[in-house]
Image (cartoon, rainbow, N blue to C red; front, top):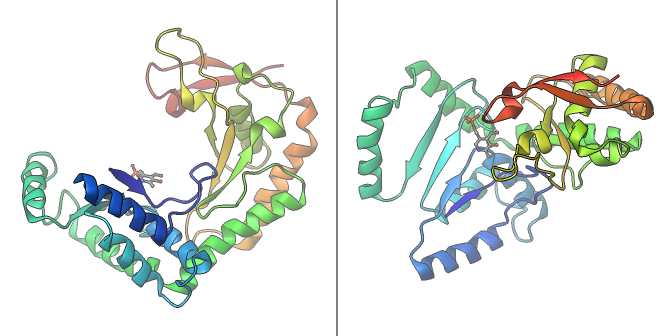
Amino acid sequence: MCIATAVNMAGGQPISLGNLRRVRELCAKHGIRIIHDATRVAENAYFIKEREPGCADMTIAEIVRAICDLTDGCTMSAKKDALVNIGGFLALNEWEVFEACCNLVVVYEGLHTYGGMAGRDMEAVAIGLGESVQYDHIRARVGQVKYLGERLQACSVPIVVPIGSHGVFLDARAFLPHLDQDVYPAQTLAAEIYLDSGVRAMERGNVSAGRDSQTGQNRRPNLELVRITLPRRVYTQAHMDVVAESVAEVFEQRASIKGLQMVYEPKDLRFFQARFERLG
Ligand SMILES: Cc1ncc(COP(=O)(O)O)c(C=O)c1O
């Protein structure tokens, strides 16, 4: 089984230690391993400290450790919580599984001691991991996301609540209720924000959902979201004000927005490379 300690991928809730203990018991009963996607574990640990009864006095590092003790291994894309430009790792508790993975890594990446990474990048990951569990850092990080979310709420912009830890999700269906899903409301909103201010956001709606393989029709997911994800240690609160002002400006103009048509659609994962034109 795989679990991800990632908060608000689209309105999700953080994993609690209590919940994870119950998952652990269930998996142990059925002989199932738990592999943890630890990419955003420090953010999740912050919410556990803030919200879960009995955890307020634990450090972020202790909570991360407790999560890892309840799982059999983890993967990490270190580009997120661990604050680096590149890199990641796989960590495993069982020696036999570790050995099997080492053999595979030699074939595809390089020796298991570096897994295809430069030594200096591994050192940066080591430092980043240490800094990611510092309380003041993670509190400021999650606080900045909350600040942006609350600024948007103050302008009546519809967002997904509760506000998560790595970004704010705009509800494009509520933002542009007059647009059919076939003119891509979330993609349209992301494009309009970019045109207004150069702020780059990400569509998570029917462009991302792709086409039904049987019918060839666009899928029509319930959620049409625009994700404004915040890089760590890059922006100040003043930048958040600029983002909020731009989104609020687009919100003011929303009635005049007509949507997009897709003029180039790649076969796979179209959200990466599709091209659009504004409907006049
Ligand atoms: C929880 C989680 N795991 C894994 C990834 C993927 O990481 P990468 O960009 O290294 O493919 C992401 C990306 O956002 C993520 O949020």
